[in-house]
Amino acid sequence: MLENKVAIITGGTRGIGFETVKLFKENKAEVILFGSREESVSKAVEELKNIGMNVSGYWPNLSDINDIEDVVKKIYDKYKHIDILVNNAGISANKKIEDTTSLEFKNIMDLNVNAIFNTSKVVVPYMKNNGGGVILNTSSMVSIYGQSSGVGYPTSKFAVNGITKSLSRELAPFNIRVNAVAPGIIKTDMVANLKKEMIEPLIKTIPLGRIGQPRDIANAFLFLASDMASYITGEILSVDGAARS
Ligand code: NAD
Image (cartoon, rainbow, N blue to C red):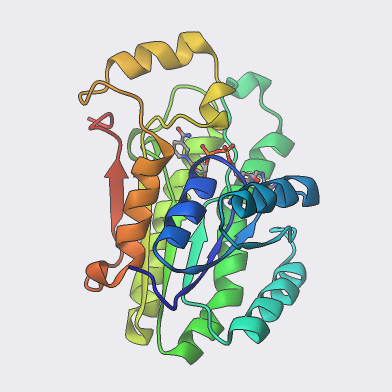
């Protein structure tokens, strides 16, 4: 479904991003993964190599636009086009407001929101040059109704929806589609870090009766990245077993 496409996936070293890297490779894309540290990037690239997948990896500081520009230029020089950007890197929060520092709130906004601005700003000129492209963002079901602790996290995901909808309008004339996937509760390290008492009752309320798997989200990204979604832009696609309702 993605033959001859070049895709950059942030937060590609584990969880949802890693599964998306694998699925995009299975569908014949050239994939470049971004992670936060050299060690985790090398580990992911090695793991992929062991299953016969050749993927390159970088660890630009997503808060530093110059760093992103350098890396993206290297990728463009090698492949001569950039077709897909998946802005998936993210961190969560679950502390009450009294226990959350301004710095913690700012750090969440920096990665979950400002980094999407930075990577998109750098990649868009290349996509315009190509005659089009696809930008996909990872939102969350909490972008619909908020959550009862860790206010920075849902706040950041409401902003992700805002970036998605606004850029879809701005970039549609250039044939660049911008969509987001809003996962429910997905079995990754992010959820493993949350308290059992918080997660287990939530899983019980999911109408489809199970926790989501990273592949459930990767499948949605694959569809939205592909030409099957060529008339879809500005959409926030819930993939949550109806947990949002
Ligand atoms: P994860 O913790 O397994 O993976 C997070 C990824 O983000 C990693 O690849 C990591 O390298 C990257 N990352 C973290 N900090 C970074 C930094 N400072 N700079 C660059 N990269 C950094 O989590 P996941 O569950 O796979 O989450 C992926 C996305 O899905 C996130 O945006 C998250 O908010 C969203 N999400 C997850 C769930 C869930 O239930 N797991 C639900 C809704 C949304």
